[in-house]
Length: 92
Image 1 (cartoon, helix red, strand yellow):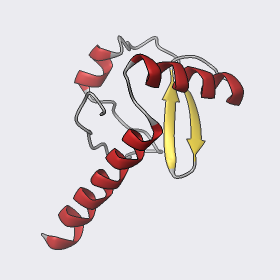
Image 2 (tube, one colour):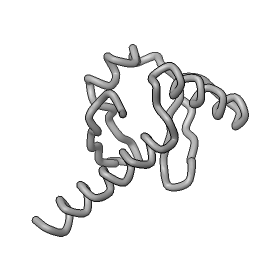
Image 3 (spheres, one colour):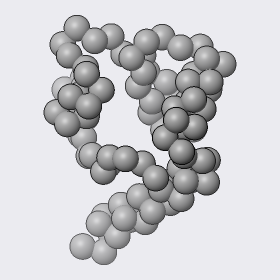
Image 4 (tube, one colour):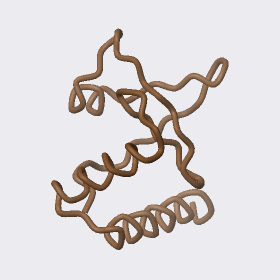
């Protein structure tokens, strides 16, 4: 299971977004932190350092193992978030 609740952000200006304070604090991100941006399917991934695809996959796998997550956990969470989003967007 993902350990933090999902946060919503909105793009503004010229494609800028604000990373929520709780997330910045949890990941120890400050004004000097350089991030790399990756597109994985329909997901946007930000990493603290530049990673190649192979090392990105290894980093994600290590992080998942460390947190006891499986691909099924992530897909289940994604499905639940998609359902929540659709309910909020179209049912309200």
